[in-house]
Amino acid sequence: MTATDLPMPGLAGVPRTDEKQTAKSFKTDQEVRWCPGCGDYAILAAVQGFLPELGLRKENIVFISGIGCSSRFPYYMNTYGMHSIHGRAPAIATGVAVTRPDLSVWVVTGDGDALSIGGNHLIHALRRNVNLKILLFNNRIYGLTKGQYSPTSETGKITKSTPMGSLDYSFNPVSIALGAEASFVARTIDSDRQHLTETLRRAAAHEGTALVEILQNCNIFNDDAWAPLKDIDTRDDMLIRLVDGEQIRFGTDGQHAVVRGKDGHITVAEAAEVDESDIIVFDSHAKDPGLAFALSRLADFHSLADTAIGVFRDVQRPSYNRLVREQVAAAQGAQEPDLQALLLGKDTWTVN
Image 1 (cartoon, one colour):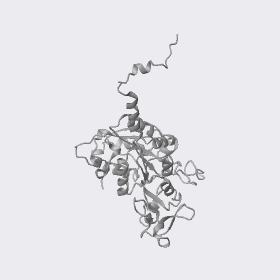
Image 2: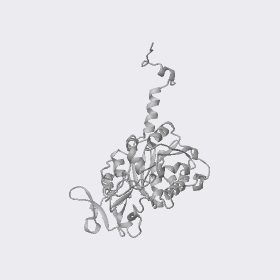
Image 3: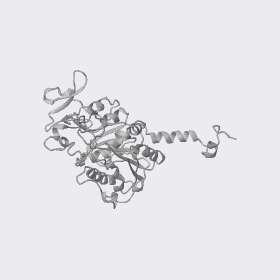
Image 4: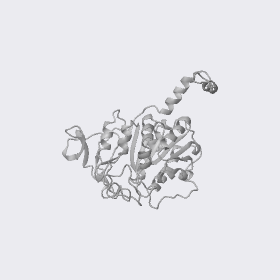
């Protein structure tokens, strides 16, 4: 399936192009300056390879970033873009998206940029359902500032800023997004090109805020942070791949399954030891986000066992952009807006 096979309400009003595009169409003449082996290269290649499927004019695509290694992204995209300020990319992107419905607006951020100084901006963009696609690169470390612990670093993490181990409890980006009433939440992996691309397709199609957490490797300051999820010998028994309409099974032979325990909470069991009807069937479009939230909490932060990836939630809700435009149109009615009348309205005073 390609993006053109999907209904694309998230791109309604964005001009299409007749130009034949390839990945090269979205590459710039700027030298890509990330450390050799960084997972950002794989994400950049996936995004550049995927965008031609949308068939959009390059002039109508915008990438806005904050501060961090991932935030160099706009330099390498042959689109419009802005390298903004620490944590504020969702706020700046909100202004762009609301005022320019003819643009496809993407935010590129990291676990530190988005979840520390930018945490408030992130959750309010999610709850408002602004028509943004937010790519959150999560390497569980501050890379640009040379290896301090981040909001997603596991408890006990030894870094330059926590030489005796971090005392903080880790943030779970998917859980935060679901708690903030996000209408689209997904998790994928930098090195899984097929899964990453399919997740980007669904995010682009969505009307409203789409948060995609990308598990990304920083080979300099936190190498192999996600190794068990990538290693060919362990990944099948660690990763739970969520697929709509299918039972939640995983393992090399599908021998593990997600079921509801006697206490009502979900748990992992051996499929052969439970009744077939007890195995949960996944639905990202479910009205209630309870199952999606529970699945986001299954993963063990240290061993990474039972880590779910895929689209956790994909529900339709009018975007903030559309609601704002409708409200403005209703307020204006048939009258032309009069800026001077607004400035000299009732709430003005003459000071002698």
